[in-house]
Length: 74
Image 1 (cartoon, one colour):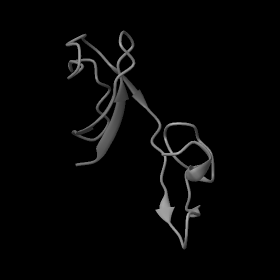
Image 2 (cartoon, rainbow, N blue to C red):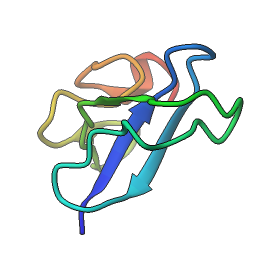
Image 3 (tube, rainbow, N blue to C red):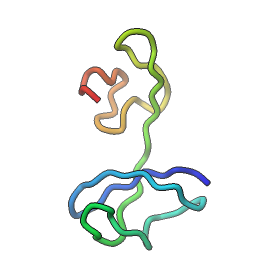
Image 4 (tube, helix red, strand yellow):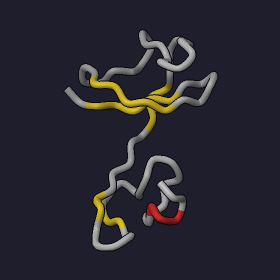
């Protein structure tokens, strides 16, 4: 079972959920505000390299998409 990332369209809360393959989020509730049907978002992938530099695929962190996560502080 994959872990998918979702964002609430009402409050903007970003959360992860272990789901069945292909889960759309249509039957879920936001854990922060209980709004139905959060939107599934593309997850980023980062590997911590040496020092403050991050390396990896997926374009960086899920917050800003930077290839260097020290840019946004996440």
